[in-house]
Image 1 (cartoon, rainbow, N blue to C red):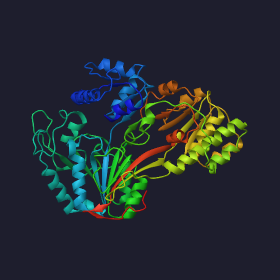
Image 2 (image 1 turned 30 degrees about the horizontal axis):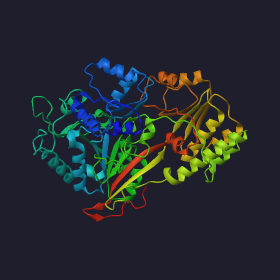
Image 3 (image 1 turned 180 degrees about the horizontal axis):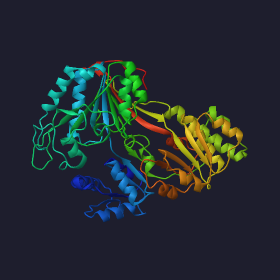
Image 4 (image 1 turned 120 degrees about the vertical axis):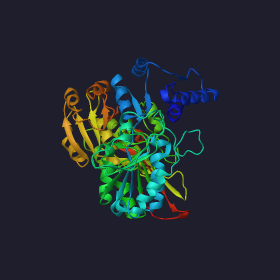
Length: 518
């Protein structure tokens, strides 16, 4: 519903094609919207029994955006149909909860089990890893409580009110069946999963121990009721194990040590972070949802967040009214670093003032829209490395405008440009520019995929040619909108959104573990 309603809110007509396994859910959604007054010629519901028809639909150039919720492999498939497909996707997750010796072990067990086996583990945010730090790894208390909690889960059909864990959406197969039946080197079952029906849809939950760094159980998303246990000497090692996976959707920490919490929040790589609570069940607006790395395709704007609708339209430049804001730092130096006309200097001055205003009032702040006493819910922005390319159709002043936005965000950038920069400009941007190349469009296209960067800000370049050279790789987000004066738009490519949800009480008594943590 979220993506469908967002597209409608942005003024787009929508073709809603639910997955085959959720066809009735999609039909109910469409019927509710039609009944609410959405015209049928604006919202279309389709079911496609034929794979070729689905391919034709997605590849049709009349489709301006495709919004996907599903596996990363599905995003790769869609891009193979059409390399330049504008794709917004919330994809896979391989999510871990770290438990340190300072944690409340009773609460940690409860949240691990709920996060791992709610919805039979078939939830993109589900916990499939738990990383036990230090003495927790050898704690008989933690292990016994985990076994008791898992083995006492009533498993049954969804229409049985006694069930706490229902069936899989379809019979287990492929990597999930392998995860339910096969152990890797050094692994053993703490709780062995059991097949409970002939169809292969009903399984009891499984917990494996002895999982090694870099193993299949560590890195591969199984999307089912299998929990893998890893161990770490200290929190630093646990964070490294948590960050090693290709995905970054949700991540959890159980700790009652404020220094551990601050360290973890600063270094963990995921879009939704949870402290001393479960890692599933994000609430719209309170915890805007979306991941990092391979858990997101496209611009990475979070569903339920302040920028989600930005990805559902295109933008054209228009002059801003003058903004009464001080321009300082690198942007101020850029104004005098190159031989600019007065019109170009005024364009940059308005742009950089817009950046400064938005940075001061929004992007530099961690906001808590919920304002709850018992739970902190922070929405914040983190700088990210971006490859900036000025193509033959772009101008030097557009490049300076974009670099000023990057500098304001504190982001590091790699720059490729068709025209040399002045010596003074090169000196000014030196502190945050990791690499600088002067090359033709053809030379840049021939090398950009080896390896491809995660984000590209393309100015005056050929988006289709870039997509073909990247072979439609979903892992690269390309921001190719025209350069504007709006700091609200131009700074977004250099920032990643992150939601942080922290339980701020124990058994109803407020605590102050995270006061001052942003």
